Image (cartoon, rainbow, N blue to C red):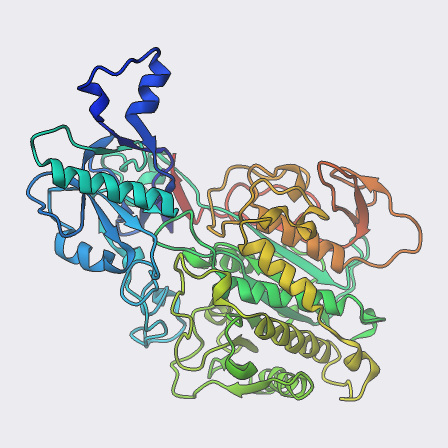
Length: 594
């Protein structure tokens, strides 16, 4: 269980400029304010709570704080806001984290994210959820653990060169002025509120109703779609990835390689599979899962499993799951080499069938598949851990770009952006996943030279466009791919799990203000690609369809959607259980201070 203190507000730089002393003419209050203040754009570190206490950053009290701005290395002999290069941030915190003269910190965007190496997370991320005893294993050799430290002052990330240059200039002016003239002052105006007195944990915070639940929306899609009125039970192969990232600075969580490369590869694989004819004739059914909340305690997978045990899904249950294939970080595969991680306790025959499918698929995709080192303690941090906890013998594997430790040195960092993935690796991974899933659906009965197997082609242009949409700034989420399916709420995607605000009363498209853009895109994309083909014209729609087997796909501000036969669901991770066509998950697993 986790919680996060409210963290939005305005950071102002108070400039006491020479015009005050020279009698400069001021004609209005707005003009006075515009001369006195310059806003700095950036992103805050926020206060997190878990079952044991507080993490992250906050103002020491409940009000705004301010202090003159200095640069790291200047004499810190009085209260100050310190401008720190990103690569020196951990060193600064180690030296001055408890110094009462540190009122706040501005971090300059640099070549590296804060911390040792580049990753803000621990050296074994979320080790407490590992289904094995060795929790000292170093999966993340670049991890600084900064995400898990508690700082009693606000920290703000300056992302633009213009803001960094302004902050540097004003800090230098303060040094030149000394104590003879008014100082340039940074004011943190309600940017980071501290927690309510006596509520230092999620349990106490929720008990006092002083925080809101962390929450998001996972997406589930069955392929081929299931007849809701007359469902047919088949063995299920789960193909899954996770969509959320977490960094020291909440609102900068691109997660390009970890975890979004896995999402892109999975979606591209689904697109390729959508062209395979007669998929319903296969012995097994595919269920695609894109979880959110995984970076904060595996919220999505844990709640999916909880609802599965309760029999929430009409077309399959816990005993129906035959195999699991998870797509992890695949955006940096060296020489198209992927490693298959499995738990030693996994069912031998069914797990080997997954591995055999991957081996066979690799031989036709110019890629190499290797088993991960047997000296590893088990599977790496992944959603599969949730399923292994429930059943150590579950037949499942995770495909990764690494063997014994992460190769992504920007794991859970602001620098895990589009430059941290390469297109060929994503395309090969998608092809590997698509072909392996076809083999598993056929119970590995397809021949290597089967026309179906040979017909699977991954659309490289689609993969490239998804990279630009998810991680770009222009057009970003205004790209043509996204706009063909939905209207984005923001120009740039952020993959932070967010705060649960409300249940979508009709569909994921009905409340764009509370469901993040990436999740809504994934829902629409999967609903479109897994829908049954129809020769007649689709019924037009805005939110809902008359036929209970259909969902409204592709409705935007400028066009009506189409009713498509698709078993695609939006799964709530927090909030009350409600009953309608979209399968809802319910659990207040995390919280956010209101």
